[in-house]
Image (cartoon, rainbow, N blue to C red; front, side, top):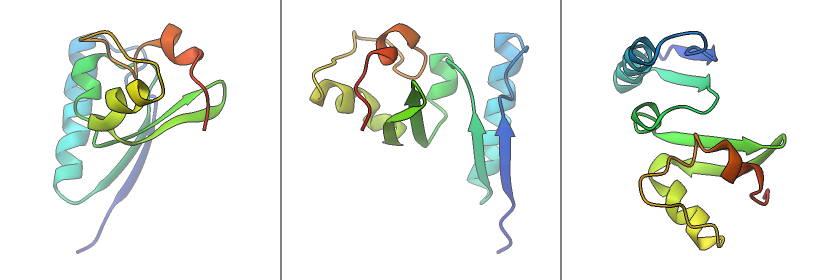
Length: 102
């Protein structure tokens, strides 16, 4: 199998929320067909974050979280930073700004 690797920098910048979601869904579909897709996004909404398999969350230029998207909330809870129900940790700038970096 021939893998095509893609790096997309801030693909949702300047797009309305519907178009941004559609674009990320398309990239997600490509990843399901064996392609590796890496992208950077700033404060994605929950519907977009839910499409991510793995996340590297950075704050103040350092890695605050790296791992499966589904593990983010538990990770923050284990650090003593429980997130309120329905809060998106990848899109919450105020909360993640104060997280300790590993």
